Amino acid sequence: MDYKVLMIDDDEVIAQSTAEYFNMFDVKTAYVTSYDEAVKFLKDNTVSLLLLDINLGDRSGFELCKRVREEYDMPILFISARTSDDDVLIALKIGGDDYIKKPYTLMVLLAKVKAVLARYEKAREAAQIAAEYALNHAGAANDGLRDKGSGSDDGRIKLMGDIFLDTNTHKLIKGAEQIGLKAMEYNMLLYLLKNRGRVVTKDEFFRNVWDDEYVGEGTLAVHIRFLREKIERDSKNPEIIKTVWGVGYMIEKL
Image 1: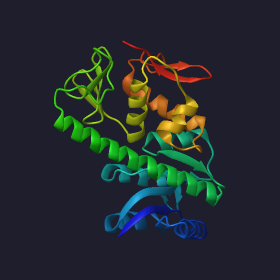
Image 2: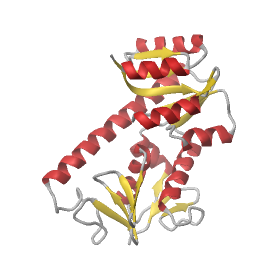
Image 3: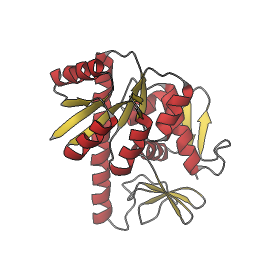
């Protein structure tokens, strides 16, 4: 069966009440309360998004996230009463898309889930359109996104030197190396390139890339940090993605 959301929490009362609330608003949701139940459910059903607690009895949500990322491509939102920065960083580092701290209100959680689902659907559609465009317009400019001299005929957009963004494979090309990007990392980098030469404010990221008013600046900063670790020669002294303090981020024109 197809589900929009799978809630994974060892507290059955929380898991069941959250699933029931989502279903009231036509977001088809199921819940499980253990690592093993989650693995079995994902094998037997199609799921668009995971809500994942860190504590799953004798197993860890971090462990489950790593396994899911090896087999599936879906947004994973961690939900946890654990509030340390280390937990947040680990969750995002291993493949989580956001970290929601308990207690949360069901209304706000539902709004966030709907925003994330819409964003990922938009990303899938954009990827499909880009693939079709590349197939039908081989040798043409990449959908009008390249600055003169910054692109090539194979779907690559130049960042700096031998570093390119491949819009066909959604990978970063650094010399002979190909580096995979998460969907949000790709969308953020592409948006910065589309707006090359001007500052993209944090609010603009939230509106036009994240499409989610409930995202915090800390989550945005962590994603920028991980993106820099993949792009920059020295992520602590970035040459490509520049911070404009108190405003946002930018990529300068070549």
